[in-house]
Image (cartoon, rainbow, N blue to C red; front, side):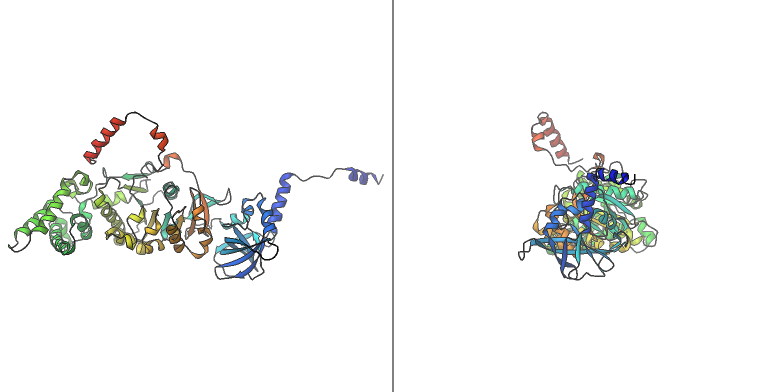
Amino acid sequence: MNEMPGNQFANAAPVQPTEAEMRASRSADNASQPIGVVLEIAGSGSQIALDLLRLNDCMADTDPSIALAGQVGSQVKIKTQDGWLLASVRNQRQDRRGDGNAVIANIDFMGEGLEEKLTGKIHSFRRGVTRYPIPGALCYPATTEDLRQIYASDGRSSIQIGTVYPTTDIRAGMYIDAMLGKHFALLGSTGTGKSTSAALILHRICEAAPQGHILMIDPHGEYSAAFRNTGRIFDVSNLQMPYWLMNFEEHCEVLLKSTGNDLQNDKDILAKCLLAARQKNRLAETMGKITVDSPIPYLLSDLTNLVQDAMGKLDKATNTAPFMRIKTKIDELKQDPRYQFMFSGMLVGDTMADFIGKIFRMPSDGSPIAIIDVSGVPSDITSTVVAVLSRLVFDFAIWSRNESTSPILLVCEEAHRYVPSEKNADGNSVGRVLSRIAKEGRKYGISLGLITQRPSDLAEGVLSQCGTIISMRLNNDRDQAFVKAAMPEGARGFLDSIPALRNRECIICGEGVSIPIRVSFDALEESKRPASEDPSFVELWNRGGGEEDMVHRTVQRWRAQGA
């Protein structure tokens, strides 16, 4: 009788673990077994030796983070006395000494976290290193659970823009205050999804702060389609930017085309006549002393009459050419229909407060972003229009310091056109204004967002002022080198993968994220995308019909010049 239970158990078939349990067990084994050892230590990085056999074991793991362990761009963790140190693998080479199963890799330290004694998990992760490992310390693969703890939000206001690579479910967030407080730059070659990614980030900011104040300069008219429901769109048909808002330097850019000594003569004449024209306004009388830069309305006819009067007072020995040049240019601007959005006689009223409230979205009325489409602005004054808008942002911030005003985000697409490097500089005031905003803007509550496909053509000082850099794929070697120089040391391993990024993937580093991350951007709804799709040549060339009428309509618009 006593033997029966024993016989029953002996004859029973052993319970086989399920496939899922076996996979989980193998994954746990890979996570708990070291894959390498530290060889040498430096301040910002280290050199480690990886076991090739262990790396091959990890490649078959179901956890995508463990499967990439030890590969370039992946993360590894190193045991320290009271926690874990996280590092990114920068490069690899085979160690030809020994049996050939060792791989030498350089790593960049990213941050450190404490260890939960019972489970061994990482918690309280923070950027920077306070306790370095010693040679001989063991390296382990970083698991998806580790990355979930590392990339978890610390409670600050953030926006979610995509998924952390190589995981499939860890959300990538950016801290809004840190990103905007110290400026940001979005970089990427043409065709990498830069415009859609910019629209995604701005949509997320608008959703997080529907009472915000965002001004975007759009040189190609791409973003009107993306923000037609959540923002206000301004172009030459409805911008109505008064000419008298320009300061003296901007007046010179528009009205004076001479060079050398002639330019200085023209400037002297324009300065005297412009100040006198501003002083004719009753507003100037109530203010006492004004300068040539004061945004006081004046009549263009007053300015031409003053130039004419000054020319009439000349003695016979003095040249009348400078006066005629200024007068002719003013008359040309008044008559040209392309300039009516700025030089119309209807814009002489004191509409400064209304104009600023309109383009700065104050109040925002649920539409926190203003898109300024300058694609229809004549090319010879586009830079001046952008300079005026940018300077208004800066001057408004300075003169409203005593108010409880809201910060303003100024986003500049194709930034290399407006803030060019020294070799490409053309002397326009827009470069000086945007450079000043980059250097001093955050003191006054101005955030600058730069979007460009040619970072190497940007002024160096401006990119270095951007606390957060979002880099998509860059194909040009000079651009890659320029971005690497602007990035913090700990992100160098990530930067080596910039040429290999897919479309709508990016590397983010700086103030806006806890540690550098590689992100796959979320897909954006069709109605929120900019009009930046590449045309299908084959499809369009195979679609015939109606071309004669199209040519006639185009010629008609061409001749009318938007009038």
